[in-house]
Length: 239
Ligand SMILES: [Zn+2]
Image 1: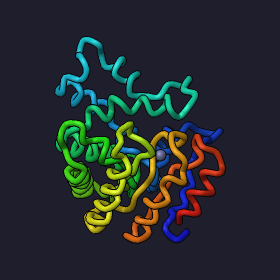
Image 2: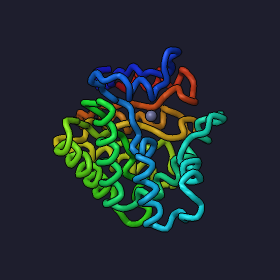
Image 3: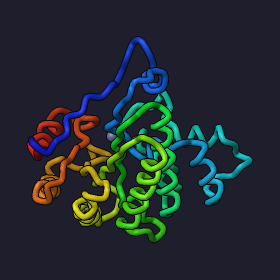
Image 4: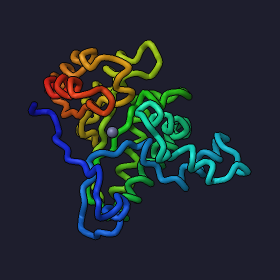
């Protein structure tokens, strides 16, 4: 299990909200689990969505916010993941990815985060012709800019996807892991498996994580969020 990061997450706190934990306490903090497309600075993303014609100004910012934020009534992972659709639609150019990653880290720095790991799935950003490699380079550029402008340090995790609805997901996942190895010295901290956990058996990904081990890539795996303890056992055994 040497390659698995053990992560303790604050999932609930009776004394204060998550926002209060991260904003009000001024001590230096470390954030190890952030999805770029799930943590976008809303005002920035609104501007980009308008520029790209993905939303109409007359529909208003509040309507945009509702499409981007998971409602309290959300009952399952599949519904939760639907909230990523507009975010990923905005992030289909190198410029948008660079701007989004920089903005996120500037925001984190303002919240007192001194080290962050930001994860994203490059293959989800190739709908308009960008390659996975261009997506990785764009995010790394945004990260480096934020590191130069603030005190924050950051690593990027490249996510493989359980499913994308496309037949070549396994080839794209392998490409993601090979890119992670290529860009390990440029700011990629490791790899991950994310997405609709119950769409496929965890065992389908054994070969992929054997590749991660062969490439000496540290990895995390989303397991047990929707798939139960057996998925956690299988994922841990990949390490
Ligand atoms: Zn996650």
